[in-house]
Amino acid sequence: MATFSPSTHCPSSSPYSNDSSVINRFHQRIALSSIRPKQCRPRKLSLQQSSLPKAVHLQDGASTKKASPVKSDGPVKILKDGILSVPPVTPPEESIDIAKFDFDKENSTVSITVVGASGDLAKKKIFPALFALYYEGCLPKHFTIFGYARSKMSDAELRTMVSKTLTCRIDQRENCGEKMDQFLERCFYHPGQYDSQENFLELDKKLKEHEDGRVANRLFYLSIPPNIFIDAVKCASTSASAATGWTRVIVEKPFGRDSESSAALTRSLKQYLDEDQIFRIDHYLGKELVENLSVLRFSNLIFEPLWSRQYIRNVQFIFAEDFGTEGRGGYFDNYGIIRDIMQNHLLQILALFAMETPVSLDAEDIRNEKVKVLRSMRPLQLDDVVIGQYKSHTRGGVKYPAYIDDKTVPNDSLTPTFAAAALFIDNARWDGVPFLMKAGKALHDRRAEIRVQFRHVPGNLYNKNIGTDLDLATNELVIRVQPDEAIYLKINNKVPGLGMRLDRSNLNLLYAARYAKEIPDAYERLLLDAIEGERRLFIRSDELDAAWSLFTPVLKELEEKKIVPEYYPYGSRGPVGSHYLAARYKVRWGDVGSEQ
Image (cartoon, rainbow, N blue to C red; front, top):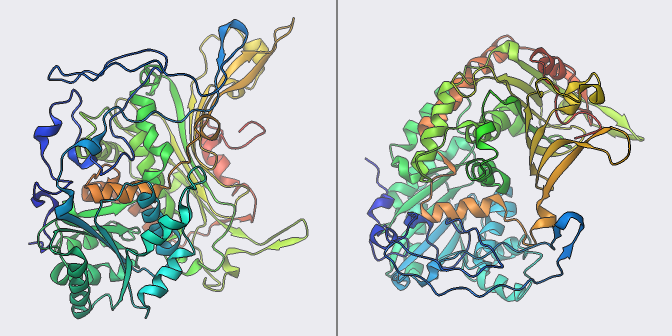
């Protein structure tokens, strides 16, 4: 039986307690896990018309007073044909101020312990994300952050280390230095071994001193190698678990190397934790464009009817980095690009993309639909996989190293740094549609995107104007996750003039141009969700099992047969074999060519 106190036992006096009676008054049920001490990231969708007065009606008949017409903050230009051109806007505030709900914030606190606090992930991502949440007012009134690692360090030394990585948002520089000082005052450090119950007991004592008799909620972030997960969880469970509130643990990937090791890790974790206390984090699920994926599909009538094999010819998930391992190959060589990127990041995005409409936006309803997609997929076959490894290349007088030139990588390593794969979902919606994945290091550019290529127009009246290459005239929806977040739709359009010449144009939503507010880092969103107990963007154990079952057979075959990867030059577009793989299914990679 788990030693941790499950989150469902959190007393109702907590600001995150599960008092559904407050929420059921509203037309759209909002899970209490969504409630924050201050407005941060609204769960409730609010579509505002800025120029029209309106009232917000509640289910019990109450209503707010009508809003006055909102004046434009900038000039509105009227172009030809009545088209309005408006300046970039800031998203509207949520219509209900959840900070006004009466919760007893004084009697509860949250203690966040970063296990592995001296590592790169903690310094570069976790502490900056926590500071950003603090700056935005999204953390509870009473919170404490503890760093825990084997390194000998004082509180002052931790604060100095953390302060070097903290930044304020570009659009919010007010009182930045003051906020940093206030945040650092809440940061403390305790050195200890990850397998020492005595050290965790000492940590527990320090946490209790700062919790000061309040209802104590504790979050442990395991920013440590997977081979010591269980030791740390065991010690935290038996020696530093919250006595009165909830205790949750965030686990970083990799979640094993295959089905067997992943299942063994899950069984070990469940010796000390309940499933609802385990938050398996995949930071790609916290990225703005990935979270927007379901909004784009389910709240826009023009897309949902097209989201099937009847109209979609293929879907591509592309991940590219323009740098190699460069000193970090020791970790990477043990996993490779398929385990590191495809089995988690890209497959999770695929499941969100392809799932059926969930019953609600509750975490379990969404995760149920994702599991259905994964269980409907065919296990990956070796014939549908191409692997590659980057080699040394000289460009512009600069010599770029090969993967095996990394001193932490064996000279005879066959670990792929590039992989392309074709996957299929055997259900009524997606039968026969190839889902192509491509991921690689040391490529020609950096990008992560989803590309939806639609079918050709049957009996197209303008075939003569398009030419022989119909693919160039195919409509394509592109969701660019990073960098330069954007959503754009490629359409065919007539070039102005007396002749009939067609051009391929983009209907473009560039986030930087449309929204003035800086996009939060993925870790901010995921940390906030973990504090609130929102599991929608975290991976459930059966979901993990289904994902590994797709990739484990081909991974074993690659390693047992010692398949030699196709070598490609550093800074190129990857192995030629990936293009042959796509051509077998009559697909052209969308990121290749003059129009991307």
